[in-house]
Image (cartoon, rainbow, N blue to C red; front, side, top):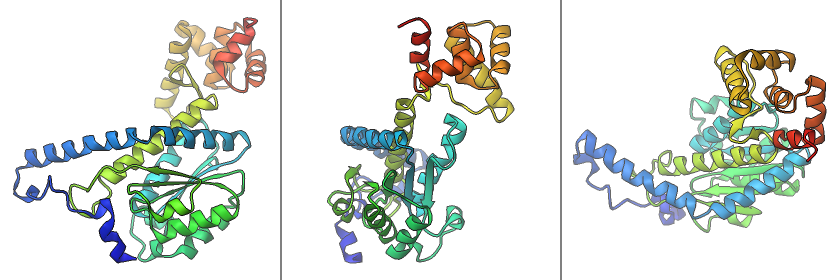
Length: 303
């Protein structure tokens, strides 16, 4: 297996950086920046596939399914990071988007030796999380051949979940398992073997797209405002009221009144103001519209 790593794009020496150890600090960071610009180009080349992945995630959410990210090392940590941001940002239940990492929670901070080398551990984690045919599982691995991730993807496939592969090489073992592949190939890393860099950046960009686009598609955004934000601290309370203001143009006293009467629920407060209704009326409109603010207001206006 390890001989095959020699063929991977992510394991090649980068001809642009062979003299990087002789450069000044500014020259080094400029060279890193130049290479990082290639990442957005690589992601841009697979946007149709990313959009297909979003459609499959939205379909899962609509059938009360969940999204799982599963990876080892940097890939696993990025999945956990993206998943952990969904509840405070979009008011989702923590179970709706979950990140799983080889070696468990300890591996978020400290490497767990050998965890990524076991297909059995990957399959076991899928079983322990109760993955079903309603769910989407995104396996993440720069190489596209991490045994833990492949084992998880195979078990998810057996359970008839939708399986998506995210990697930074072409024609990897993932492709033989996944229903859909996202191959963001940005070329060799600045430093050989440091796939936390360009590969990790590409993965982060794509994960941002998957959750953000999916949340928009299920009504968590009005215009370009997060309207399901959970005001769980002082900063978020301020943000919640500011979002209500930007969405409605209402004066501060009206915003505060609607915010309090809505039970601190931003989406409800916005509909209360725009539709000129009370909390119960706003909730009914949102229920009829499937949770979409724009459609709820249209219903109130007879459209």
